[in-house]
Image (tube, rainbow, N blue to C red; front, side, top):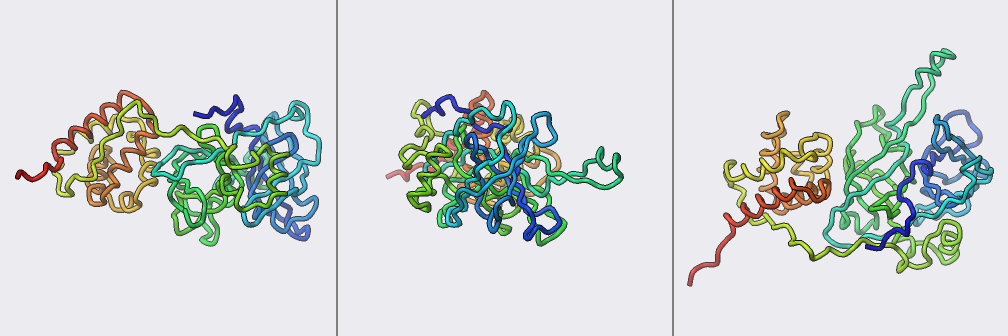
Length: 371
């Protein structure tokens, strides 16, 4: 693995709330977005967040309502609509300890292969609007703020190939009360991390994808979408490598352990008793036993499985229903088990799961016809 040179991955103290003043100086909250501080005076965000802003319209705020809170004015140093990428320069001097140089992050690329990789992002979406009860009690008027959302999920690397973005499958929020608004508004510009590498920026929520999916611009695609002057600016100010060869990449799949067996050949008519061993291995895993992570796991595979499986409030029947539904959609059972493995990591429970899957595959492997 190419190590991140000792540089940190996601640091909450460098996550920026990007606040854009309402057009024409009108009263109101204006536009909101998210960003990440990538240098002493530099913040990355999405270009559409600051589109149409003028000098002095954009401020950034860090660690809001906490002891280390600070905010500053910025200017838009670079904005590319093609890449949906903007670089903000902080024009006010950062206070105290925040004046120390901020080391650029490690920028990364992901392989275009059949992978579902864990990822995370931290930003300030609309569904995190909260009422500040203490301020309301003090002055008698309602006061609202946006809290942070630390979204952990999976990226399906081969999704959104034509758009050129990463698809992030995350725990879905409730729909916004206003059907014209997305609950994810304000998340745009949040840095997307995979194994300590900054691999993209949240760019959009496509309503047709459902509430549990976000699209993120890919760092590796910036090189095709930005001109040489823009790339040079990002290199000098944000630490982006000058060419894609300098991006950090995950290890190729190691050959130290055998690949998990495929269950794609199992018949859809398999009896429940045949699935008992696999179900028993699944229900004891924390990822499956927790409803939130189980729903997150299902959201990263064929949507038909999550939509059509006969969900039960009791875990074991629910798992049986998921397995039976997967059997009707070839390949989805393998995707489900792979997503569970990714979230669980190497553990004794996963070893039992793999053993049961291997035994189930062996019992139903199609033997060649005798000649």
